[in-house]
Length: 257
Image 1: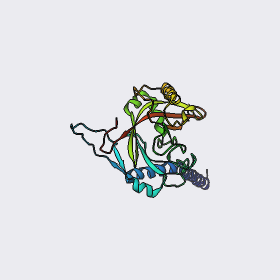
Image 2: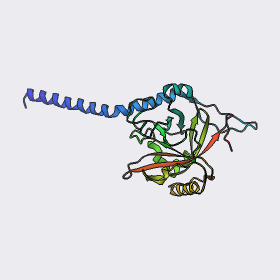
Image 3: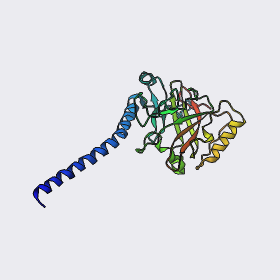
Image 4: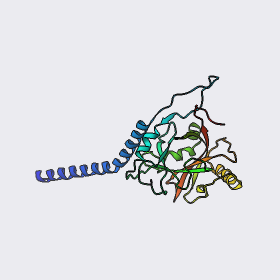
């Protein structure tokens, strides 16, 4: 093989290597940027909440973090909450758009982003007074957004992460999880209920029965619940979902009974 041919092949292989590296960077860049944007949001707008004790020196149950909602509102008025689960990647602003397409590919700052944002169904009330509030997020390949929802279908993970926190300017909520499973995108579980009654009681009983794991959590007929939902690649148009019953936390740091 002549020197010229060897030199040409070297150049060709080098170009192929550079192109392959460029493709990897292009594919990974959106994930990296989304991860950095969300980490910056958590670092900028949240801080650790100091533990508190009650009159008998017992430790009160409070949210692990507190949020600067005034600063967040200046970024985007559609932000009205924050969702957080200790020991997971779930640590994001919570939004609600004019419709359920608003934040599919738009981040919390209102910028175009394929990972979108974590958002509440546009048909829900913003004060979590619907009997069930539905929260959506993408299943990202890097484990961000709601990619971890399927982990709750394993008993060990469920037992280690029984609580998700939802914080708002008007008060915080502790969501005690009670059900995790795979369902269809058009499932009955996405029905929104306002007010207790036999239909809602039947709904709670049915979604509890769907669960792949045991929780031991009891839900009253007037309980307010949340449903977290994301895509899953298990089959067709399937969704991974988890349900939790909301318990408001009062201003001095205790869970309201």
